Amino acid sequence: MSGKYKNIKEIKKDFITVAFLYKEFKGRFKLEKVTPSEINPEIRISEKDIHRPGLALAGYVKLFTYDRVQVFGNTEIHYLEQLNAEERKKSIEGFFTFDIPCVIVTNNNTVPEELIEIAELNNKPVFRTRYPTTRFSYFINDFLDDQFSTQVIMHGSFVDVYGVGLLFTGKSGIGKSEIALDLVERGHRLVADDVVVMTKKGEGVLMGAGTALAKHIMEIRGLGIIDVSSIFGIRSIRFQKRVEVIVELEDWDKNKAYDRTGLDNSTVDVLDVGVELIKLPIFPGKNITVIAEVIALNYLCKHYGYNAAEEFRRKLQEKISKKSADNILKNDDISIEKTTEYFEHDFE
Figure 1 (cartoon, rainbow, N blue to C red):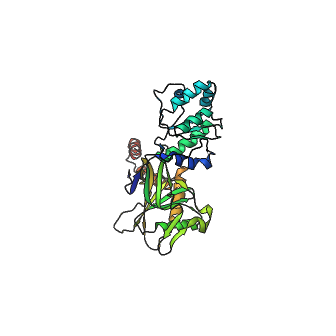
Figure 2: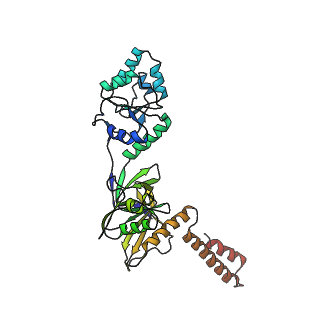
Figure 3: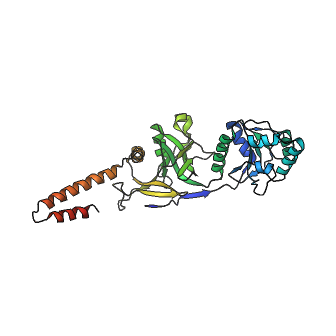
């Protein structure tokens, strides 16, 4: 059984600023600004792809995607270096007639003086990184893909249990945060509480994280706000995790039929990614923490090829088939042809 999960809110960014990109990259990827002026906070990046402008520098601009981050690798820098001063200036001036967001020079290449001067005149920032072009392109593409991908926000508690991402959902006050706190106390790791932000990575991976504001803060009713990393240590948290199972908590209803075998696997679509859904009824005294650990371990067993429910069904079918065969063979009036016909019908 599958369907779209309803209790979510979709959000999508239209742009990020170059100043934000620089702030995020200057420490992690040793990005340095080579133009002297401050970055104009109004300069925006609205495309998640980057561009290598070799052809544009050579004068072919018919297919120039100028509204992307422009990456100058060895090819672009060496091309400019082999031009004389007048040709180099003309090439760069033609390049900056387009409203580009910024230029990033890779491989720690020397940035031509003309590039810095003309970029400064056009109020466009130029950066440099020591990373090779291919490696840096991977990093920035991954970052921009995260920024511009459609995200969904879900109310719940997200915990890494034995390496499996369990997202607990349910109505307000049902005990999601308390379950997450109990799991953390047992050595598992909190990813996010209350507000979980999920992003699709690639075609079939859904990553979950907390918000920048809340991070690993929890609200426990009757106690108040606590900081999980301060109380339990750095090993009790992680910043993101793949969402693998959604555990929907609901009050026990004696008139409702619940899955008792695990054969009817339910999945829900979140950003077109299928995620396993388990509806877990709760009542006072039920040890949800231990059940959560078993959910994670059972998921790992299925992931590595062992499904307890399917194995039980296989053994049950073998037993039923053997008993039926014994009953048939006891009847001397039944021919071999009839016996063969029975088995063929039984295993269709």
